[in-house]
Amino acid sequence: MTRNPLIDWTVKKIRNTLFPGSALYWERHYSKDGNSGSGSYGRSAEYKAGFLNQFVENNHIQSVIEFGCGDGNQAMQFNFPSYTGLDVSTTAIEKCGELCKNDPAKQFFILDEKTTGLKAELAISLDVIYHLIEKDVYENYMKQLFTAATKYVIIYAWDVESDKNYHVKHRKFSAWIKENVPEFKLFNKIKNSTFSDFYIYHRR
Image 1: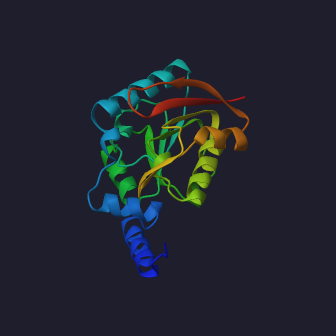
Image 2: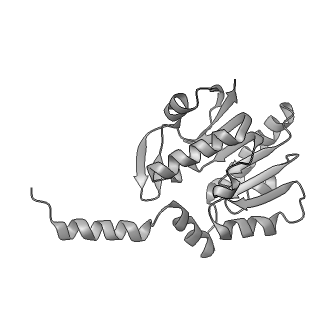
């Protein structure tokens, strides 16, 4: 069957309109009063915060950095000695700063080349990896996540390879970690009732 170049061009145009790139997509989303989604609210947010707060306390962790902090609703529930939240959206960072302005243990910055040198004992990624559609964006994100961690990395995501829609692409991140950061080993996996699970990596 012969492909119609006009149809192909139209489909590509629609896709580009719906998803102009990870950073711009989320900046537009938050600037239009969008939030971080159901995973950062309600029972899901309580579950993740409860698990992480307990992990930090049990392992005597003094510093945490999050890659993709979103609108700050999830961060509000963290009880860490020191927390740094990073996100590609300027609007999201502004919202975070306002929500957590009375918590001196929390600080927020734009995720860019200026923040690549930041370190913490624990680096976390919650419901972010499957929103990184572009391969280079995904790989750069993973490198930054693991470079920032001096002891642990915790990922909350679905460890499969599949596409869902224009702004969701699940990744088999365990394979990437094994190949690219072998100094980190899977310390534990905590199954959840939803698709996403907690994956805890420990630097050897």
